[in-house]
Amino acid sequence: MGSIRQKKVEAVIQAELGKYFRENARSICLGAMVSVTEVRVVPDMSYLKAFLSIFGHPDVKEVYNHIKSHKDEIRYEMGKRLGKSMRRIPDLSFYIDDSIDYAMEIDKLLGK
Image (cartoon, rainbow, N blue to C red):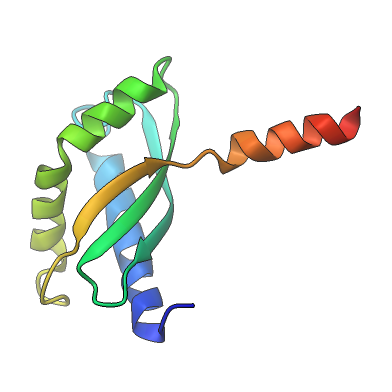
């Protein structure tokens, strides 16, 4: 369980990442809609995991790999946006959030 500060930092970064992906959907997200479903920050605020849901593109892996290849550019942009409120911007790591697919699979199995 994270501290109150961790939870606040996670919420702020989640909102800013979501805004960034909306603003740069064509260039960074290859035209896909990317939603930041969850952000987890380690206690020393040096590393974070961002879980992404990707919609509206036939190849989710291609969009995911494109976002991962622009990780440093995204971190730099987060630094410009959050530089006044955070001393150090955490190192970013992106993961595909498959919880919706998992829930659909469970629902399908329960329906049998």
